[in-house]
Length: 278
Image (cartoon, rainbow, N blue to C red):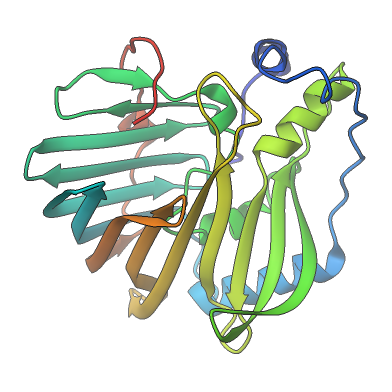
C-alpha cells in the first residue's frame, strides 16, 4: 500500500504557524507529550482488519448508496457515491434534490462544493483527520505504513447498549514548536469503537472546528452497521453521520467495489475560493 501523508515538513510547519494564530493564549506554551503506539491497540487493530478484509490488502473502495441529507427542516434524498483510496484521499458526491454536493480530501487539504458549483477550501485544521470516515478500515491498515499515525487502547466499554472496544487514533508529527506538535495531535484525534464480538467498527467519533477557531469543537459521530460481504470484504451498508448529535446523513449502501484501481488523480482539488463551513 502506498505510504500516505507525504506533505513536506516545511509545508506542515507553515500550516501549523497559521493554525497557532487560532489558539487562545492559554493553549500556547503547553508541551506536546511524546506519542507512542500501544502494542495492545496495534494487535486489536490487526484483528479488526482481519475481520473486515481477511488477507485482502485494501487499496481503494467505492460505495454506491441512497442517501437522505438533513439540514434543519430541509430534507433531501438522492443517490450518493463515496470513494476512498487509503486513509488520506476521499471523494463524496451527493446528487440531491436541490443539486450536487461534493467533498474532496487529499492529505492535509480539502474542498467542499455546494449546489452552486463553487469550490471552498476546508480549513486545514480539519484536514488532519483521516479522510476515510465512511470506511475506517483504511485507518487501521495505515498503521502498517504510516509512522505518524498513533493508536492507543482505552479499554472495553458499553456504548448504545453494546459491548465495544474503544481505541484512539491521532497524528504525531514532531514540529520545531511543541505548540505546533500539540496542535496537530489535538485536531487529529479520532475515537474508534469496535464491536466486542465481531471486532467490526461500529462508531467513529471526532471533532471538527470552525474555520477561524481550531479549539471550538463540533462533535461528529459516524455510526456503521448492517455489514455485508462484497468481494470478501465486510462493508457497512448503513452509515449515519451525526453533527452535534443531529442526524445529517443517512446512507444505505447498495453496492461496493473493492480495489478497482482508483488513481490519485481522481482526488485532484479544484481551485478554491475562501474557506467556509458547509
